Length: 417
Figure 1: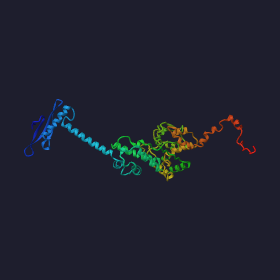
Figure 2: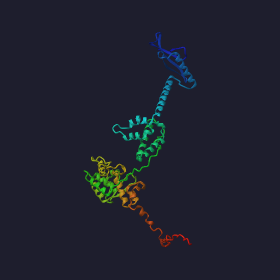
Figure 3: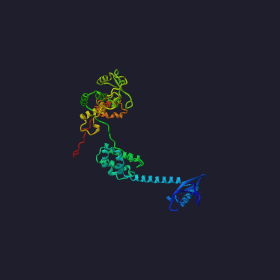
Figure 4: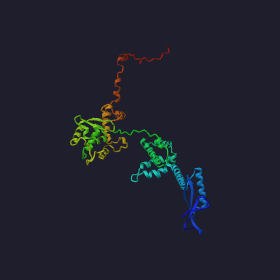
């Protein structure tokens, strides 16, 4: 149906073929026509039955013409709708941001962090307990945006006062940092993570346990009874060559030079390749193990021969737990496979081997890593100052000739004097 022009410039309508608006006339659909940048544009305004009257159409086209004239606002009904939608979204976003900014640490932990992070099949009880006991009582009812490093320092101080181990204190600070990271990633929080501003306590997590020779004999006696020699042989390389587990797993037949009696460690963790001498027991073991291997074959393969092993068998840990780890709570004092490497270095230090040699044999990147063993060196400080036993030999006669004045104690004068 053709558009019908109204008395108002730019306002047109068409009638519905059957539907009436009330009992008098057919329903009308209004259109707006106007010019933008020299081009005529027509847009549908709406049905009269829906409240879009001729008067409203007149008012709307007047607004559009004024906007075009002034170069501001919307130039079409489409732009008006888009601007209204954008405003609606912006208001909704602002409201959501405001709501999120008002969320407390406790709310976020209970409603977002815990449900998404805690595995139903394996609850992280440590994290929940840490929050209930140490974190939530201090910052639980504070808004995330209000929590500052000073508040976390309070938590830290409380835990220290309560006698928690430094590692436990640091772990709880890590939990808090993890919560804030999740909050930041999900736009509940903006800015720096306050946990990153809190210094963690210094702790020494390095293992200090090593085996005595008697303990080593007991261990290897048990390992020798295993169905295969794999764990025994790998353990022997750790104890007698100081190899890391990863270095042992990657050993190939080409790395063994039986003529020079050397084992070569290539591309190790310590970066520098190293050559290690072979004791007779290791030499014999390697001869046996390499007997049928090609140069590029690995010394230790999985049962199906598909690839080299990449871990030490769990049987080893079960054995050392039974032998040495009963009632041991400090991980640094527990015997693990790496303890054999520590034992290698400790025995060398106890036998008086110098720090540089131990460092090279261990493949340490710096001497700092080797220093932990040097307290075991025999008479370490006594031998260091032996050179000062007689520091002034040419003056010994003069020193011996100095009179002893210790007896020349002043006597009290008599009353006659």
